Amino acid sequence: MTDAAPRPATDPATGLRRGWTTGACAAAATKAALARFWGGAFPDTVSLVLPRGEVPVFDVTATRAGDGWAEAGVVKDAGDDPDVTHGVTVIARVAASAGGLVFRAGEGVGHVTKPGLPIAVGDPAINPVPRAMMDEVVAAAAAEHGRAPDIEITVSIPGGAQIAARTWNPRLGIVGGLSILGTTGVVRPFSCAAWIASIHRGIDVAVASGTPHVAGCTGATSERVVQGLHGLPDHAMLDMGDFAGGLLKYLARHPVPRLTIGGGIGKLTKLGQGAVDLHSGRSQVDLAALAEAVGDPGIADAATALDALRIGGAVVADHVAVAALAAVERRLDGTGIAVDVVVIDRAGAIVARAGRA
Image 1 (cartoon, one colour):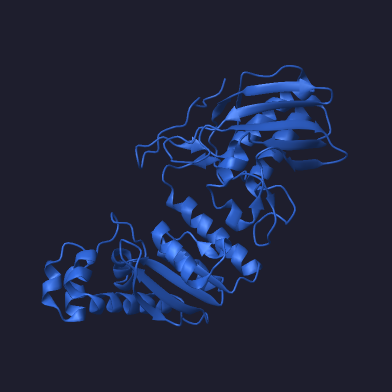
Image 2 (cartoon, one colour):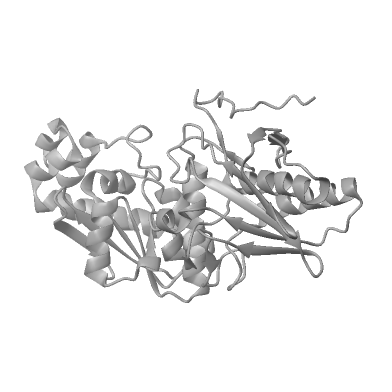
């Protein structure tokens, strides 16, 4: 018997259900397929030891077998995280290889086409930790059945190509489908770490491909405006969101020639005032400080930064742009990165710019 829980547990820090990554699902599906390939029958469930010791149980579905192969699927449960891959079926087909462990991308799993990712160009987009998890599953099953661990694993996600169009994969140069991801096997709801990791991978691709100019924007509107203003390709657009600190800290260690920061006046006011997490629940605009900085006491009574812009006009917008630029340049001091800042209003109109445009 196992102490494993059949469903994702609740994260004590948030009260939300955790889920399992596509990498964990692929490893569990591999284990189920190997049971049929080397043992004779598909199990109804399989348990799996994840990198940090969790031992979840996965229901097995989509089982098929033929001459020299077997495949099984696991439906991904992302818990309470708004993960676009929640509910997909991750399928692993196993067959004998000519030697060693070989990974293939099946339907809905992408291939890497740009350098800078932890997987080589041309390889299936199956990340290192999921590969290691599947390697462990194969080694254990081979030992159990007295076989050599010479296995080809083809991972598929039906419908994955359509879902991938809503992810970062096209920008990262992953074509044809989704990535098989996960460093712990666990999806933590609304994970800041996962978002920041995506920012890091975007920077890695930009650096490796020699992209001369990247942009970090706080939302979809500012991203659209900045991309159109500078004529940037999709892979140059880093989905910064609220995580200015995560972007700037990583760029300080992995510099590019030029960076544009774009955003609404509220979030960029906070950035200029020293905040690096721009979420409304974790930082606030100091309207009194803004009023003092622009010499307009009436702004202290404004309801929001957007209201302050209405009251103070261009003076407020220009101050926000210059202050945000100074804050970014302090964090990138010594990197040689040329920075400019673009401030927009709610309608997407540019209200101020600063820096080396």
